Image (cartoon, rainbow, N blue to C red; front, side, top):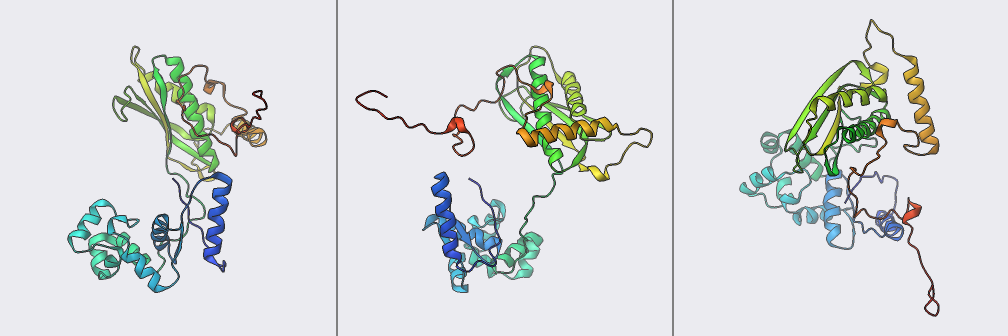
Length: 318
């Protein structure tokens, strides 16, 4: 399940537009959708929730429509109200989103902070949460997966941590940033967080050079690894992320120009021929330790191998 917001200013017949979007998505992907439209993001979210129970599309045009929608929405279902605040409000007689809108704004700001006050203004039809067109740059980058089987070999762990460092590097380069700190963790249990150990390393200067990231990750892995243990998960984390154009360089050493040329060449080839066409050798998996995907849904629209095949039977012969 996923969702997104879109600014529909300039669209005349909103209900027809939403129905066309819904039918197009279903026709091309067979995925059912629900669409809610309102004057603010919070009201659109409420409309979407109600649309899911009805015809699949709900447009809140008039004030009466908004009041009815707020009255039909329990406070526990309001987007932005957590369980603790919902319980707190229920103890004060707030049962629906409409009850929440009728509370004095000064009381909401005092008891639910500025965040709750903004939500109340949104439900009253006053936009307070701008529509974000581009996702903000990450402050930290995490690349982690659980192995398909327990791993005991340091060589296999090297492959895993190199592959995950490469994934993290791709996210780092996608926002044209560098990282100052790299951390590696190992987990010796299938339960998340159990048997967890980790180490971090700070680079002399921020970097986005993949071989440096992988070399540091493998160095930390060597310090964490204990022979005879079974490992189920490893994680690579990047911190201290800042734009490459503003990265603080070491005063006593000059950046190696070859690093930028190599990185640019690899990215150019992968853009032209497809993701991971050119990869670092250390991240090439040769074993079956990778994450299991036995029940991965077919990718009918992006992978030729997953196209459904139709066969014609005639007189018992294909």
